[in-house]
Image (cartoon, rainbow, N blue to C red; front, side):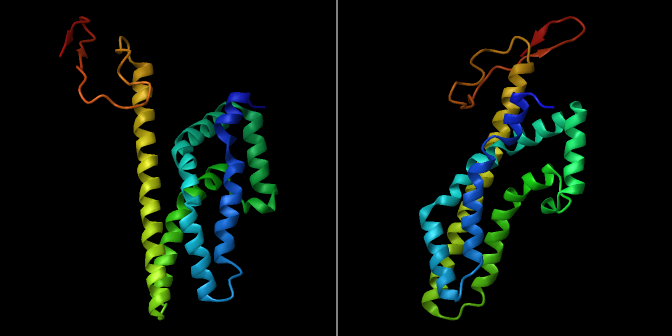
Length: 196
């Protein structure tokens, strides 16, 4: 149905995020008081555990590209995917593309929810704690979005390097750092001459 490489490109590492997600959801559920909620969120923020989502954010585009490729090129996988969407109640009629975007959307939504909740906390000490939590959560969202953006830029550069003829081997360094100055050449397709 799928080649091992395709399977890995789509699903590798997914199970790592389940405990992180369950931990986060448990903070929002089952708290008997606002104080216990704030304390549990404070512990989660201090643990920096949500930063573990970074690898999910940075592999999202690759995951989606692999999924699209497989749905377009493997009819049996497409059929399996469609059957699952229609017949597995736990999926709520969502395809893998919709399921994979959920973590990308979830973290910013939680930050907005916390910000909204903070408006209703009247105790000054708890309000101060919640403000710090909101600030840290927003900082983490910004960090994850920047990491995702940098990853997308790097992937585009690598794609350009792979497709480019006579691309200098040091176009990108091994550490994936972009060089700041590279001589760029335009090739005239009619006569094959280059100009800087």
